View 1: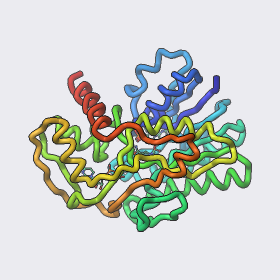
View 2: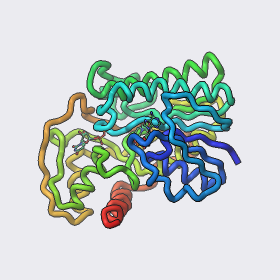
View 3: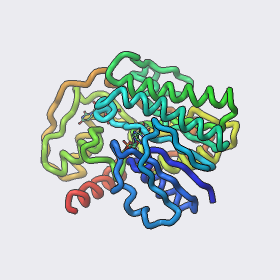
View 4: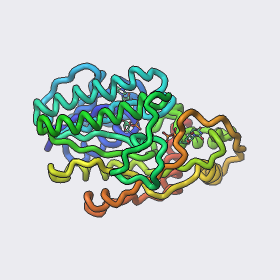
Length: 313
Ligand code: NAD
Ligand code: UDP
């Protein structure tokens, strides 16, 4: 049994990860400041004596004796990370320094939840890990993109300078139950709109693309990545390589929900990437044949069931 710290553990991805780690028989400490996460996401874990929930902001130091750290704390939806951009950068940079310091002192292995946003609006498609990206450093998305890029830099420097055992994964758009209904990201927005029979809001002309990964596939990859030998540190793309336009996503969600919603078009937000699809050749090799197993239709149906149930209670 390991003692494992999950920062941002009360968020969408974090809550699923905590659940999986507990099921695997570990002791889990979840720290979160509840900015976008909530106690509700981990309510079902509170009675487990191997689970500890702590209200804490990662921009402040945190002391504990742990074997592994998953560093997830950071708002992930453009709406939320742009709400207080200075805080977003502080979370990515100061939070990461604090967690790397903890890993250094305790000799814990530490995994960074980085993002496909490090590739910005990519000019190479699909994106392999050795692509350096096309990121605007002064735009409205920069607090997130550059914060996450700096976090990767910090991980590499703590590794080279202090031999900290690191793992970096670059997560591509992931969705599933426990996304917040007001999260602002495309899958939750469209599902909430379709279930309420409201108009589906496409930003731009809907020809921009994304590749959507179901949460269970991501959690499996995170666990496998943490278990790789110490000399494999990434960065590693983790996502579903099947690419859809946002218009196709909207039509799919309307069909699956059996909704009568109409599609409306709104202005495209600044610096919105035009295309995104992971090259996952390295992940397949490094994670013992891992690949996404949940097709979009199935994942969307499961997510809709969650949102329907959530609305009813
Ligand atoms: P989320 O917003 O649901 O989760 C983030 C969690 O971090 C929340 O519980 C929030 O309250 C917490 N948090 C934020 N700032 C904090 C701080 N200063 N101190 C302590 N806790 C703080 O988002 P998510 O989708 O679960 O994302 C989790 C991680 O995965 C993030 O780091 C995100 O950048 C990364 N990621 C997610 C996706 C995706 O598609 N979901 C894609 C790429 C990367
Ligand atoms: N989007 C949209 N309607 C919405 C929310 C998002 O058309 O209600 C678009 C957004 O402009 C982007 C894509 O969907 O092109 C994915 O947006 P999201 O915020 O989910 O994540 P991103 O990949 O941009 O970080």
